[in-house]
Amino acid sequence: MSANHSAPVPNADPDELRKFDALAARFWDARGDFRPLHLLNPVRAQFIAGHAPLERARVLDVGCGGGLLAEALARAGAHVTAIDLAPGMIEVARLHAAASALSIDCRVAAAEELLAGGTTGFDVVTCMEMLEHVPEPACMLATLANLVRPGGAVFVSTLNRNLKSFMLAIVGAEYLLQLIPRGTHEYERLIRPSELASWGRSAGLTLQDLSGIALNPLTGRASLSADVDVNYLACFLRP
Image (cartoon, rainbow, N blue to C red):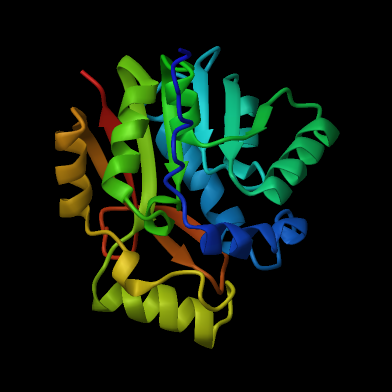
């Protein structure tokens, strides 16, 4: 009898995927729905480069969207694999990378699929603004931990869960200033740094650094900050 090997179940919310897939065509409009990501991207790339050498590094960008961070890391000299479960986003990422003469391996794939298939041992794994959109964020962080090599780094960005974050990131950004589409974030899915750190420890990761991102949507200026009350970045190391 042949063995029955079932495919890994992606840790993804179909409604969330449809929501972002519908916006794929507008991803590279720096003044459109994804303007905040365009403003934050240089700061994220700076944070990553400050903690991990990127020249010739094997990098996996999980939940890559249209390839904004993947392109920045490729320009820094990394060999980048970029994955997302939204087909429209991956198509946009492929087309934009090709137009930019960048060699990026863009795939419609789940992190769990890569892990099950033995595609592991990355020097750096990144997962930006995704944990708050998946059903089991702790399990996702554990998957990321298993995809990176011992001694490698996992980088995550997400939103804190508190009153200040609710007022600025949801009420302000989505409803008052309309910087991003309404319904992009759900408050109960936002993640406190203490929760993220705990999940990291359970996954065998060591929290190396935690940094906030200060973003002024009116001036378009973004910078790293000691304030992690709203947007924040985390660097984990796998011992």
